[in-house]
Image (cartoon, rainbow, N blue to C red; front, side):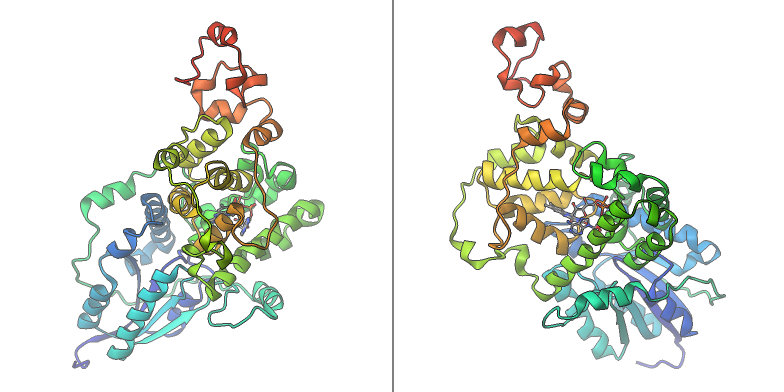
Length: 445
Ligand SMILES: Cc1cc2nc3c(=O)[nH]c(=O)nc-3n(C[C@H](O)[C@H](O)[C@H](O)COP(=O)(O)OP(=O)(O)OC[C@H]3O[C@@H](n4cnc5c(N)ncnc54)[C@H](O)[C@@H]3O)c2cc1C
């Protein structure tokens, strides 16, 4: 290949790090003083994976649109491309002399790592440098987690790099990797019940949480209705990197309410650390996605009842707390920790179905789907770790304790609108006479 007539450029390849600030790859590209492009790739091969759903792509797409707005006059830097990664990079290498590709190292599933290895080989073969940065405090290739806690705090205390626009030469990239029109229409139709995407929204949620919502964090964490505002709701922004864990940590620590609400905020910060901790563990062993955490359970047999799995997935089991949680999750993309745990417990313990039948369904529904947290959590709730105490959540007890007046249940199951409070979590306990008087048919709901 002759480089003499080709423009030399660098590339920032964004993955689950869609933000401008505290972005090591972007910062490095700016320091390099070579014109650069920012690319995001929607890859058909990735979109087809069982744990990837349209809502994930919608959130990503709207985060990218927000990024374009934040780039303002430099919005031309960002290219949203659709295609197979090798084909896209080959095209870039045809048109430019690409010096370095800057990106974060993606902590995904085994399939993500395989794709990254393949593209790494192509870069090597073509003589292109690939400079990868670690996400938050996650380290690749460590044999054990000795000293990891200390490392986490060191990373959290490092300076945050703010994006400062510099004049960058415009790069004309001619390509045919446009989003197919039907896919683009799907991406644009962003349901209003999902959390709004992007870096600015991440900050809005964080500020709002620290300005007041945080005071009830611990009190309401297990309540399906109240937790929607008392929890931070940052998970989806952290998952797609609209904000870094370090940015959250530093903002929280310097906020005046940190001392005022020390107890709930400390509890919040420990969960923030778990986020990295879980992903770190998954980095070391990622086959939890399909293998039992404790191999002794591999021999365990479950029933296989597709009709029951479907009823569970659709929120049509007839158990009010299960159905309300599932319908709420389906519609909004979020449900609190306790209800997530209860949904898995019900599927695996009450319905006796293999956790692998539910893991992908939930992954598809969670807007904040993060493999490193999701798969181990599913297995913990299914009781297949062999380490944690087995917890079976009784959905009736959960309902009575966390939704005593049935507000949450009635919101998501209109069929139960007229059922009195004392029966709302067990409508089957009503006498025939009571059902008749309420014009309620148990079979119809
Ligand atoms: C079966 C199951 C599956 C789950 N799958 C996911 C997932 O795919 N993605 C995901 O982000 N969380 C997952 N969680 C953990 C947890 O439910 C969510 O992180 C939390 O509900 C998100 O809401 P929030 O941002 O308001 O959290 P907050 O309570 O405000 O916590 C702050 C942050 O800490 C992290 N965090 C909170 N709880 C946990 C936890 N138990 N483990 C690790 N990190 C945590 C999240 O990044 C969260 O944004 C799962 C839990 C269960 C039981």
